Every structure is written in C-alpha cells, then in structure tokens.
Image (cartoon, rainbow, N blue to C red; front, side):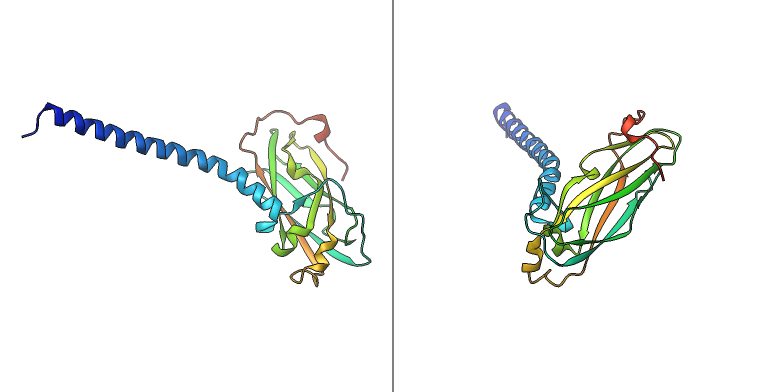
Length: 198
C-alpha cells in the first residue's frame, strides 16, 4: 500500500522531469536561433559552403594574370522582382579591385523588401573571393515599379594561385538569390532606391 507521502514524492519526481524537459526544449530553441548567425559567421571566415570573404581593402599586389568572373542572378517565387547582372561576365586581374552591377525591379503594385543570399562556385575559390562592398549586406526596399542598380566591389586574393586546389582556375561564378525579406515592412522605398536608367 502506498500512502500520501509516496504520492507527494511521485508528484515531485514528475514535476522535476517536466521542468527538466521544458528546460531542455527551451535550450534547444535558443541554440537553433543562435545556430544561423554562428553558421553564417563560420562560412564567412572559412569560405565554407561557397561563402565569399568580406574585406575592408584590396591587397597591395596585383598579378599579371586574369580570371573570368561569371555572374548569376535568381529570384525566389515569393518576391515579385526581376533581377539580373548588368554584365554576365567580366575579366579581372587577380588582386585588382573590380566593380560589377546588378539590376533589380519591383514588378508589383506594392513596396517590397528583399534580401539577397550569395555563394561562389567552385566552393574552393570562395575563400579567395573577397567583397569590399555588396548589396547583400543589407535589405533592399523598392517602391512599386521602381528599379535600382546595385554595385558589388570585390577582388580575387592573389593567394588563389598558391593553393593547389585553385591555382589553375580560369573562371569563378558569383551567384545571388533574392528572397522576400521576412520582416518586409511594406513601406515605400527610400529615395536612393528610385527608378534608375536602363
């Protein structure tokens, strides 16, 4: 026979198990939110997953060797924009600062905010593809029918030719995909995002 004392002990055990499970779930949810920025930081530092590096300035050394840079542009179906590179291919010297432009246009009747993600192919070249300035570092809001040309300033690190995995590369592809921003405020675009010339 069990008495009231054993019922209390059992109830306490159940409460401890329930609290432990709730704590574990809360910790897992917290880690899942932290995982995305930590993973992004890891990719930016290492070039893992084709994520280019970010740099403040270009290197001092420019090699007498060119490499072809191909640009790829994609738009998620939920974002009513057109998006394309102004030039699909350019050739740059390794170590030289280069500038490329992408054009986006809001084809809807409402203001829309988009965010771009990017990667480099082949993945082995990502650690040597360094961006100084890029529209992918911030949200872009376009008014209805508005278009904008967005610059990307980058360079290819001369260390690319010292790496046996990349020393013979002749072409690198920089690819962007624009998504509708999850925090799309639905407000009119800033003046800087007005209609640009074609």
